[in-house]
Length: 237
Image (cartoon, rainbow, N blue to C red; front, side, top):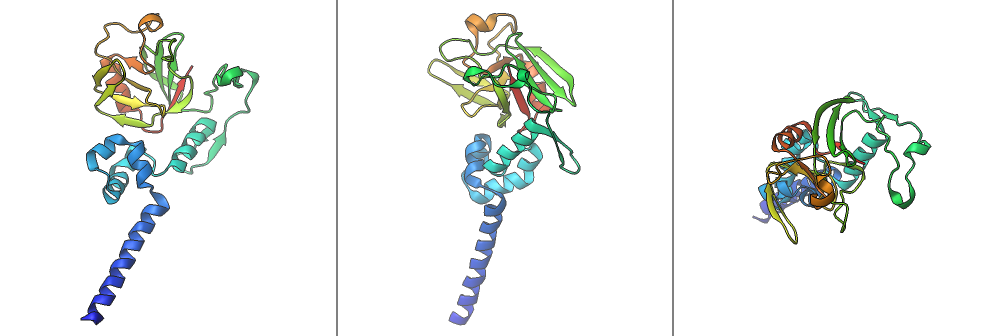
């Protein structure tokens, strides 16, 4: 009996090690579970289930297998254009005085000449614009964070980190449900519909803005959600 059991155990161990090697080489399930809570809520905290989601669905949605892949992809999108066939990166132009970060880390102006597809959030004019191949294909008034008490929408170059067709947003003084959620900062600022608002744009944000998120009309949020992917740059200025 031992002659049969030992080879079987050895073979099982080899298969187990090979499976783990595949995950370890290209996939960090802990990162994937933490980065994409919508996936975690669907498939649970299971290495194989998370890996299967990534290979069957996540890759098509533009999700990343590990933190380094996310960082590299963001740098490639922000710092240069990428040929979709060869993967060759064309470096962005050298920063000029107009694109050099100002004191305190805020950008005086953000150079988007190297980007093809991105979401532009113009806080001053309260306008959100989606560019595809450098052409504006969707534009809408919005309401950003109230610029006081730490509620201002953070400026800078971000990217869509998470998409969810529905999400409950909770805070110290709010508890709301949104139908389309597109998070673009690590601390949970995102683009989403805001059914409780009747008007968008103008100076609403100065006295009745959000807690940092970018509020959009329902139909705009639905359309934007369908047009962006995890990894799409979001420029806030």
